[in-house]
Length: 614
Ligand code: ADP
Ligand code: MG
Image (tube, rainbow, N blue to C red; front, side):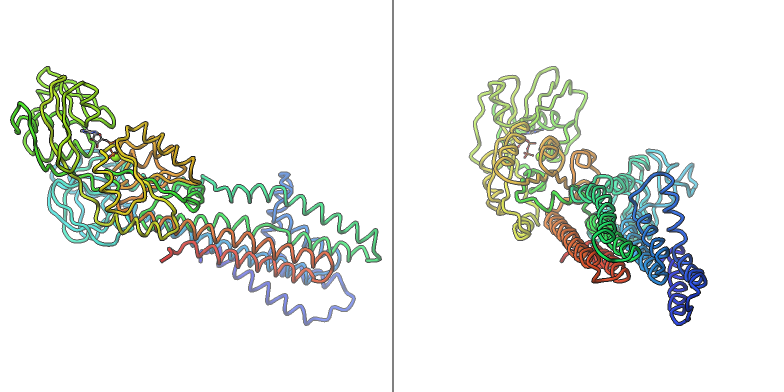
C-alpha cells in the first residue's frame, strides 16, 4: 500500500468507528446536534470527494461519479437521514481504496518490467573505468558489465564470455551463453563473468528503451470494449439522472409519499447507477492481460490488439525464419561452365550486401574474404534474388523466376531444397542447393496453437512447391501457398481473409512487412534486435519461438472472458438494485453496499487477468 492509500484507510477506520459509536447516542429531537455529530465522520472520510465534486461542478463537468456521490449524500442529509449519508460516503471511499490498490498492483506488474532499466553504465575511457548515466554513453564506447549487473546498452562482446539471463526481455528463464563477437541486448542480466562490450546503439535506441516505449504507449490504443464503456457512461449517466428526477416527481405527484421519501427513492436510484465498476474494471483487465503477456516476452501494442487476438480463427505463417530457422546449409554446388569455387565466390559476393536469410547463409558457407572492391551496383529483387555488378559484368543470383526474367537457360535440380541459380547476363552458370532446418519447437507449437482454438493454419512462402509442401506436412500446417512474390503474399492473405473471420499473420519482419500490416493482426517474432519487425507489427514476440503464440492467444481469450463477465455481472446486479430501490424495497445503505460490492468483485475478477493461464 502506498502512503496515500494508508491515509485513506486510516480515515475509513476512524469514520467507521465514529459512525458506529454515534449509533448508540440518543439524540432525541435535537436534530441539529445529531447533524453536526454525523458531519464529523462524513467529512473525515469524504472531504476530498466533496471538494473534488465542487471543483468539477464549477468547471461544468456535471455527470461525474464524485458529483453523483455528493448529490446523493447531501440529499440524504437534507432529508434528515444522517447515518445513511455517512455510510454511503464510507462505502464509496472503501470502493475507491480498493480500486486504487488494484490499479497500483497491475501498474507494478508492468513496472517490474521497467525494472529492466539500467541506472548506470561503466565505461572505459582512456583506460579508466567510469560510472556514468547510460544516456551519456555513445556508439562505439567500451562498456564493462560485471556479474549481477544489467547490460545497459546493446553491444557486441569484445572480451570475455558469460551467461546471461534474458527473462525480462524474452520471458525465457533459461540462461543463454554469449562470447566474443556476439551481440547482447540491454536489459539482460549478466550472471557469471565480467565482459567488455562495444556499444552498437545509443541508449535511446537500445532494446530496453524500445520495449519501454511500446509498453507505455500500449494503453493509448483502446479496445472496442473500452470505447463502448466510455460512450456508454456518457449516455448512461445523464439518462439515469433524468430517470431519478422522474422517479422523484412521479412519487410526489402520483403517490401519497412524502416529499422527503420521494427524494430518497430518487437518490437511491442515483447512487446505484454509478457505472464505476465498468469504467474501472474493463481497462484494468486489459492492462492486466497486457502485463501478463509482457512478462512472457510478448509485447502487445494496445488493448485493441488483445481483443482482436482473442477472436483470431486463422493464423497465416511465413516460412523462412518463422517456421524454419533461416540458417540454410549448402548441400551441393552444381556449376555449369565455371568451377564450383568460382560459382560460390560470385554468389557470396553478390549476396554480401543483403540481409536476406538466403544471402547470409551463402556468405557464411563461402566463409572466405569478400573482395568487395570487385562489387559494383547491387539491387535486391524482392522474392526473386539479387542483381549485382561484379568486375563490371552483370550477374543474377536467385530463384527460377529470376532466371526466367533474364532468359537464362536454367534447369531445376533433382535434389530436395532451395536452388540458388547464378547467371551472367542471360548465360546460365549453375546453381547452389541450400536447405533450411525446421525450428525444434515449430511442430509442437503448431499443435498447441490448434489446441488453443485456432481453426486453420496456412503457410505462405516465396520458396518452391517441393520445399513448401515438405515443411508444411512436417510441422502439421493445414495448407500452404508456394512460389509467391511479396505482393502475391499480400493477395493470398487477402483471399484467406475474405474466407475467414479474423486472420493473424506471423512473420519475422524480413521482407514481410506489407503482409504484417495488412493482416487483421500482425505478429512479428524474433524482434530482439529487429526494428523492422517491431515497427510493422501489432504483437511482438521477443524471441523467435512459435510457442509464444498459443500463450498469447490464451491470455487474450482469458482477458476478454473476464471483461465480458464483469460487464454482464455489473449490469445485471445494478439494474436489479435500481429496480428494487425505485420500488422502495431496499434502502440507500443496501444500494451503496451493492454498488461497492459489484465494484470490488469486478476489480478482483480483473486482477485475475494478470496471471498467465497454464
Ligand atoms: P520466404 O517467403 O520464404 O520468406 P522470400 O519471399 O524472401 O521467401 O524469397 C522467396 C525466394 O526468393 C527464396 O526462397 C529464394 O529462392 C529467392 N530469394 C529471395 N531473396 C534472395 C536472395 N537474396 N538471394 C537468393 N535468392 C533469393
Ligand atoms: Mg521471410
